[in-house]
Image (cartoon, rainbow over all chains, first blue to last red; front, side):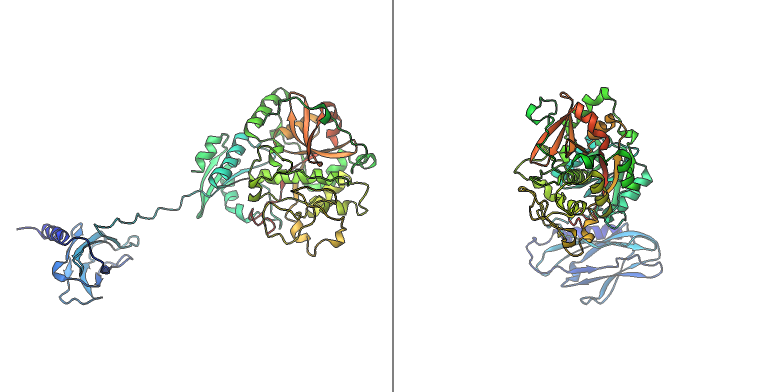
Length: 230
Length: 294
């Protein structure tokens, strides 16, 4: 006798094998908890939209028991995942929509302590959008130095010019005691100045939209500056 | 850029027919001690980190040629004061603008070009009005001004930007650059007293002030400042100019003259003129380079 997990895997494959991807019907929507569910209850998974219950298959990875509600209506819970064990699972749902188009959804579920998760619908006939990457694009580079102790290396100045002209990166030089017209540290340099002082001067600070990305102590070559700006 | 080239003798040690703003009686008052006192807490000694052994000057000059990191490579325009007595202020504006552009990090590979304008100037270069300082240094318009006077004024309340800019920076207060000829990158207009400056002008001027001024104690230190990218202002023979590059082959200083032209001072002139000179180490920096006056 097949295990439940094996049965569901076969059912899932059967569902995925039906009907060509030609649907123009709106996709059914899977709604599952995006925040970790406390241990002790059930995490309900809801499907809205047209669903043929007989063509729904599901499985969890890794395998955990899944309860199926007897009565389905649009917007009502259809599945319930027990939360007596902490961890992160993926609930895989496969069904066909009204037009017979196979639809596959992967729903992450976190039970107990864990980071919030976002459901990622996956349609085997449509490319999936890439997961957003952390903001690491360098938009500004600042060479911070102390005038009485450091000279500005010519290759570094040339590199800053190259970043300005060729890459559109705001590449500038800051003497550590420089102020703006009000006598304060210029707003655009507050974070980079602090980072440079913490690292030790002279220092190159690469920053992006979210703030300081990296510091490079005492660069003296054009290559070192260009590398820091990548 | 190649600074190891012969110099046209017509451009070397040029003495104007008469002073154009730095007469002997004013020059006599610009002693090193007086200049340091005038700058007060902004005065700085020559940093040891900038010393270059004279035996290494040629190598440093070649490095500057290769990377275009001479002071002149941070000056993106000429000015023209003819026939006024504004020379000390034209020299000071070049030094201030060059320092500021160096902070901005954009190199102008051929220095100032007569009749032309760099597209890159629009990325943060602000053109300052020499007249905005001269008007206070000499309300009588004719007779010139001492270096000590114009330095003190610039340190205290800064320059006003001039009416011609490489882009619209949203400047609330501007003033014509000169009462002289001007050019495509410098506006010209009547002489104006400080009392006739635009209302509230101090709120803009404070964004364009020198912060630190270096005074060397030897002529070799003055050359080192230029080798390290600092424009060096001097007054001699009735005229004030900013030294902008060292021609090692000819042992002469090239300078951006306020007549739309590059000229040169010989080593003999360098050794006699350096002591009344200065370099600006840093200028006020904006919170946003494209909104330079806030």
